[in-house]
Amino acid sequence: MLMFFGAVIFAITFAAWWYLNALACGMNTTGCRGVTLAWGDWEALQFFVPTFIIGAAMFLFGLWKIVRRNRR
Image (cartoon, rainbow, N blue to C red; front, side, top):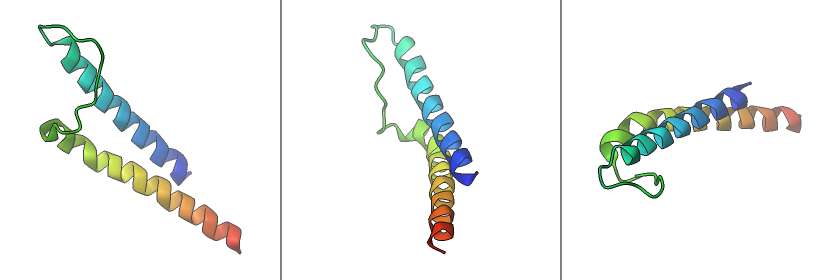
């Protein structure tokens, strides 16, 4: 269950990050050929990093619990 929720949180955060970059691309007055993820834009990314970390940690903790349970 933790793996599922961790993956969902990570995926939703990634989709929101992509959507923010697509919105910025669409608002560009000179046009835009394609959406690129601006990983160097720390002002916006500082809001997404904590949820990326929470989602990844939940996924890895759930994976660890499954591996530990199967070793018994």
